[in-house]
Amino acid sequence: MSRLSLLVDLAALLTREVDLDALLGTACERVAEALDADRASIWLVDAEHGDLVTRVALLPEVPQLRQALGKGLAGYVAETGEIVRVDDAQNDPRFDPSADRETGYSTRNMLVVPIRRSPEAPVRGVVQVLNKHGGHFEAEDERYLYALATQLGRALELTTLRPAKQSDPGLTLRGPFNHIVGLSDPMKRVYERIGRAAGTEASVLLRGETGTGKTLLARAVHVNSARQTGPFIVVDCTTLPSQLVESELFGHERGAFTGADRRVPGKVELARGGTLLL
Picture 1: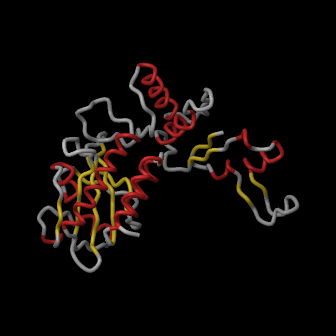
Picture 2 (picture 1 turned 180 degrees about the vertical axis):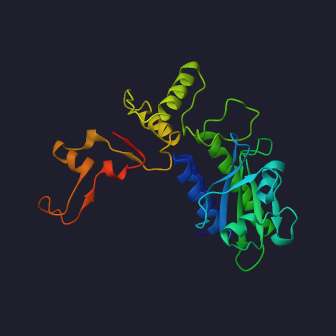
Picture 3 (picture 1 turned 135 degrees about the vertical axis):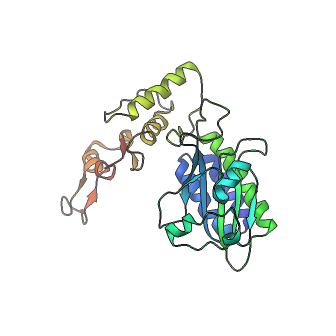
C-alpha cells in the first residue's frame, strides 16, 4: 500500500474511531509501516503529572514509559515544538539512552514530530519513529510524518475533553471523555457525576432515550475508574432472544446442550476486571 493510501486510510479512521487507545494504536502501526521504520511510539503530554507518557508504543518489552518535558528527543520536541531528524542518535546530546537500557533496544536514527492540530496550537504530544530499515530518515519522511501528526492533533481535539484550563497544553490522561461535547452547566454536572461514579465500586444506572449517549457515558466511567485497563464489554439485551440471554451473559460448558462442542465464556466472565454495560 502506498504512503498516500495509508494516509487517506488513516484519515478516514480518525474520523470514526471512538476508542482513543485503539485509534493511537492503529496510527502507530500504520506510521511504522509507511516509513519503513523498525518501531514507532506516540507520547502524550500528561497535564496532571507535567510529563510525557507513552500512550501506545510498538515496544513489547515495556508497557509504558514516562519522560520529563525537555528530556530526551521526545521531551525536547514536546517542549519546543520543533521537528527533529537525527541520523546518529547515540551521539546526539539531546538523546536519552535510558529507554534503550531499560528495553535492551539499540536506537540508531530517529524522526520525532510534535502532535498538534496547527502550527499555532499547543503541543499535545509527539510521534516518533526509530531505525529506518536500510538507511536514514529523509525530508520526505519528515513531511509525511508531520501531515500525519497534524491529523492526530485534530483527532485528539475531537475525541478528548480538554482540561478546563485552556492554557494547559496537555491532556488529562485519566479523563478522556471520548466524543462527549459540551461545557454547559448541565454537562459539567454530568462530568462531575462521572468522576464520582468512577471512584466507587458501585453499579451505575444510566437512563435516557435511544441515541442520547449512554454508551459514551459508560465508557467515560470505565476509563476514569480503577478498571480502566480492563475490558469494556457491551451487551445489547434488546437484540437477544429470551432463550439466549443466560448463555450470552454466563456462557456454557461443552456438552451443555446439543451442538455445544466447546466451552464458551459469557460476557460476565469476559468483563472480569473491567466493565460490563447492559
